[in-house]
Length: 329
Image (cartoon, rainbow, N blue to C red):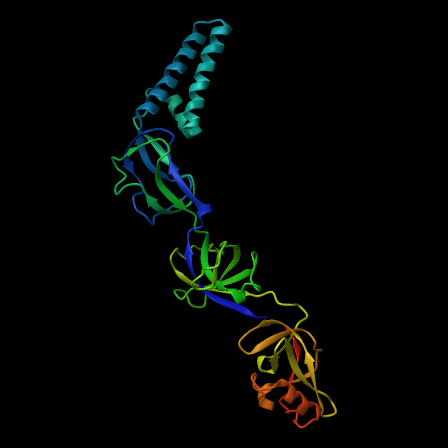
């Protein structure tokens, strides 16, 4: 089968990029992860944050818990108990909405006072690819601000360019093999996810985005890679040497050597082409002996009709090198 090879550049898959944001304002007092390129696992501590509004809500929770306990000890009526418990539950819900974990709430329940800082955990596994300041420690954080960005590199995207004539052979969903000069002999699997909407007017190429499986995280963004796409091709097409195909105006012809020493021009329709071989979709049968143009010194500019006449008269000798049409394997 014909393969189409091109060069690509790896990039993050934007879908796998997670922004680390807080739902409350505050100051980062201690950063546990400070460098771009560090690997973090989901649940790792990223930083300890001091937030006055969070501290106030935690203290409110503790006060509410004390109040419920006092009411219960004093044998208050069920209406008062229910109201106090509903208030406590509302405070707990506010903490949950701020991404305070159940474990942190349980620890708070047992504490005498609310902790000055709260630990903030990684929401995903991946590499730190961006941070909002030079140093996180001491930085002021506002609600919704992206403090860090974490990228999951178990899949990457390769941006690869295909020329117009290749586009009929590659499509969304086509499988690809990825190789990197940095790691000779290793291969990764990929698949064309989608194409840009327009062809580049300067290069006449269309950019495809190829999803690359990178389970061992060997490949990194910004690396150059080779992308090879196996073109579909017709399952029952035959292969002949590219030299055997003659073009005459609208017609495409292959010369077939007949058993009696004569020759017969056959009109054919073509499939994919590689450097030396050409797929023929219709017009030939398995086992037909095709004659390459070099054996007849027919060049594409010469009058094919004259060559045909010569062939039909049987002036040419079919070379014993006549190639056999054969199926793909």
